[in-house]
Length: 135
View 1 (cartoon, one colour):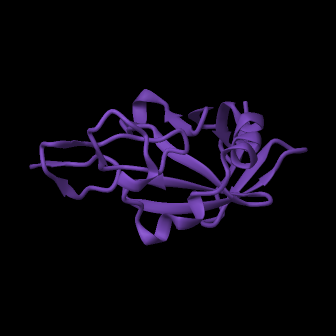
View 2 (tube, one colour):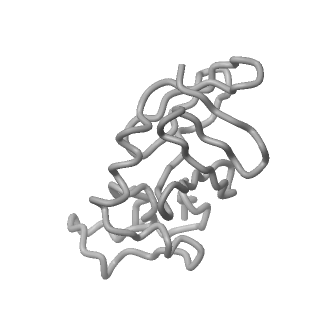
């Protein structure tokens, strides 16, 4: 057995951890097909299975480099459906997905964080109060 890097469950070697275009599907059967029937999505990720066309639009508009507003600390870049962290953080890229209107979620260290997006100001305000601005 090895551990799936997305959901941290132990999975048999006959399966491989894969990430769908939404970044939420893991432990997919290694059958070479992307059939939804073989995907095991955790219950808490069911909101993430929203239509791809609606969810990628906002993430497209968020792509680029981001920094923390209070101290201008460079955090990394949003590319596609992931936050790619600066090397100093030693984090793997974090999956991002849109949950509703102006809300996104990010998976980091096994926890989900919800952010509110203000596209006009190019800001993301996270539930813990941290604010990111585009560099």
